[in-house]
Length: 550
Ligand SMILES: [Zn+2]
Image (cartoon, rainbow, N blue to C red):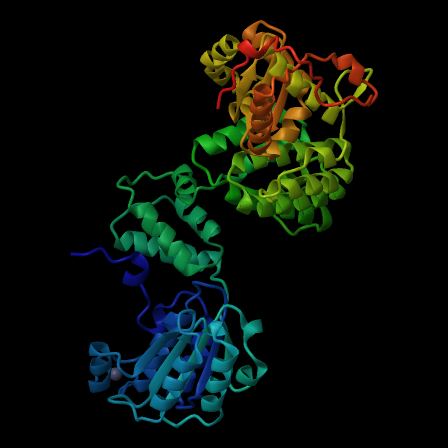
C-alpha cells in the first residue's frame, strides 16, 4: 500500500473535524442550514490554516440532499455521486493557471448546468496570482453569476485582490490555529498512529509551525517517520535544520561578550553539522526582534522570557545596527558561493558594532560588499582607492603600496622547494581550527592557498574576493601564526584569483623579455612614498629560481 501523507490522511471531511476557525465554521454551517447561500466567497488567511479544506467541505455540504446540521450526510445519492466523481466541484490553482484563457474557459463552462449536483462549485486557490486580464474576466462572471454556480476564492494575500472582486464576495478571515487546539490535534493524530510522542516534542512542533496546521502535521509526519518512540527535541531541530533558541542565544552572547573566537567556532560547528546558515540568520533576526520588544514593552513576554531577552547588554542602537547587518548579510548570502566566509566576516563586523557602539561599520561593510557582489568587475589596480591599515604600531603603511612591493618581492625571490615545503604541511592548519588564539586566521587561511613562496615571502590566493579584506586587516596575526606553524618569519600578501591571473601573465611576459624582478625595501613605502611598481634590470639574476605554479 502506498504511503499517504498524514496531512491528507487526517484532512477534515466535515465542518466539525476542522481544527480552529470556529466562528467561520459556525457562519458557514448556518448559511447552509438556513439555505442562505452566497455566490462568491473569499477565504483569506495564512498558509495551512484550512482554507481549501473548508472550501471542499462547504462544496459537498451545499450539495447534500439530506444535510445533517450543516454537514454533508455522506449517504445520499448526491453525496455518493460527488464522492465518486468530483465533477461539479472544480479546483483551480491560480498559481499555475493565471492566464485569461483559463478564466474564459471557466466563463464558458459556468453557463452549463451542473452534471449531477445542485451547485457547480469553483474553488480558486491562490487567487491573488491571477493576471489583471484574468481578474477582469472573472469579474464579468461574478457580476452576474448563474444561480447554480458558487465561487470560493482562497488567498494568502488579500491586498493583491482588486476591490472590484472583493466587493462582490462574502469575506471570511482564517486565523492561525491557537496552540492548545493544535497541541490536542497533534496528540490525537499520534495516538491514532499508535505512536507515543512526548508532550515536550509536540509543544515544540506547535511552536515551530507558528499556527499553520499543514506545517505542524507535516512536521509531525517527519517525526513519526523516525522509527523510535523516544524522539527528543534535538531531533526536531535537526529535521528542521535549525538551532534551539538557547543555542542562538549563546551565539549572540559571544557578540555581547566580544568573544570572537567562540563565535567563529560556533559558525564552524553550524557548517559541520549541516545547518542552513540562512535559516540561522532568520533565527537571529527573530531573537533580535524579541530583545527589541522586551526592551521597549513590558509584559509582552512571560516573566522568564522577558528576563532572558533583557539579559543581553545590547543598547537599542546596537539591536538596530545588528538587525541592519543581518538583513544585509541575508541579501549577500543569496549571491555568494561561500556563505560561511560571508557569515564570518559579518560576524566580526557585528562584534565591532557591539564593542564600538558606532554606526560607521554598517556603511563600511555595505561599501565593501558592493565589490563582493559584483564578481564580474575586475578591479583596475591603478584606480584602486587607497586604504590605510595600522600594520606596524607606529607607522601607517599604504596597503596598496605594500601589496605591490610584496608581490614584487615574492616573485623576485620565489623558490619552488619552499613552495613544496609549505604546501606539504599546509594541512596542519586544521589543528588550529579550535585554537583559542589563532582559530579565526586558521579558518581564513584554509579557504585560500599559497601560490608563490620564498624563504621570506608567501603569496596567498583566494577564490572569494570578500576574504581579501579580512586577510589584509589581519596581516600581523597571520604572520605570527605562520611563525608558530613553520618556525620561520614570513611576510605575507594575498590576491584574488583574477588578480593572480593578471600577475602571472605579466610575469611570464617580463621573463620572456628578460626583465627581472628586484627585491625592494618595505621601509621605503612608509608614509605613502611613491615608488614605481617594478624595478627592472637587464641581467636575469633570479630567473632560474622562479617557478610559477598554477
Ligand atoms: Zn448527502
